[in-house]
Length: 365
Image (cartoon, rainbow, N blue to C red; front, side, top):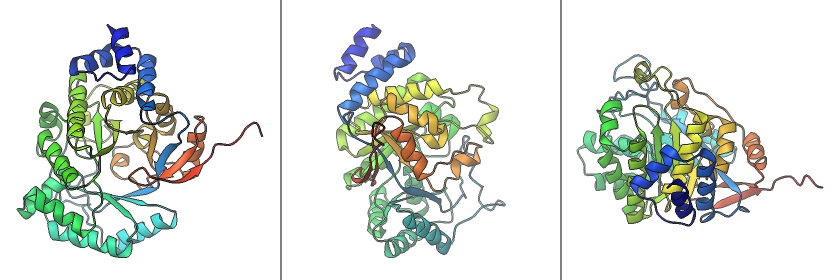
C-alpha cells in the first residue's frame, strides 16, 4: 500500500484525504522526502536557485482581545505593556529595511479593539507615500476579519479600502489549523476556519496574492493537518491565489497552552510535515522553510524534503521570540546556508520574481 501510494504521488497523482493521511502516518521519512522532491521538480528543477526575500516584520500593536492560547506576545486591552507604535517609529524601522536592500514589509499586530479601518488606511497610506516601491505584505485574515467587525463593514468593502490605501498582499497568519475542533480549543474567540478561507478567497478574487500557513503540534492530530492541507488545495484550485505554503511547529514557551501540552515536536516531524505539504499541495508553487521557528540548520535540511524557499531574512521578529524561541540569521549566513546545499541563492520579491542571484562558489577553481 505504501509503495503504491508513493509511486503514484511521485508520478503526479493527486492524493485523497485518506491516502495522504496513510502516508503521513506510515511512510518512512526518507521515502516522503524523495517523493516530495519529485513533486518539487514539477515546479522547480534542480538547477534553479533557492530563493529568499529581504524583509522585516513590524508589529504595529500587541494589544489583542482574541486571547489565543498559543500566543505569548499579546497584551489584553488596557493591560500594562500594551502598545500601538507611532508612525515615526514604524518609519524608522522601514528606513532600516530599505537601506539593507529590503523589498517587503510584513506588518501584523493584534485584534486591537481601538483601531478601526481609518487607522489602517492612514498607516498604509503613510507607508505607501514614504516608500512607494516597498511591497506591503500585511494584515492576516484574522486582522481583516477583526476590522470588519470593529468598523461594521463588509469583507469586500474592507479589502477594497485596504488595497486602495496601499496594501499589496496578505500573509497566511491566523490559520493555525483549519479545523473547527482545533480552533475551538486554541483560539475560540478568533474567527473559525471557514472565515479564514472566506477572507483569503475574497482577497484573491480581488487580485491579491497571498500565502498560506500551518501551525501544527498543539492539540491537533494528523487528521487535522491533512484536512488543513486539503482545504488550502481546494481553494487554490478555485482561485490560484496562493504563492507559497509555510508550516511551523507550535512554540509553547510562556503561552497559556503550554500548561496543557505535554507533546514535544521533533525535527523529523517538521521534515515530515514539509514533505507531506509539498506532496499534497500539488497546485501551490512554493514551499517555504521556517528557520525562524526551527533554526537555520533544520530550515536548510528541509530543502532535501521538498522546500524551495528560505522565506524572509526577518530583520525583526517579536511573536515567536516572545514564546522563547529565538533564531537570528544575517544575509550572508542565509546565502552561505543555501550554497552549502549545492544550490545558487537568489533574492526574490514577494511574487517570486528573481532580483539578484548569488552563485555558489566554484570549489574546483
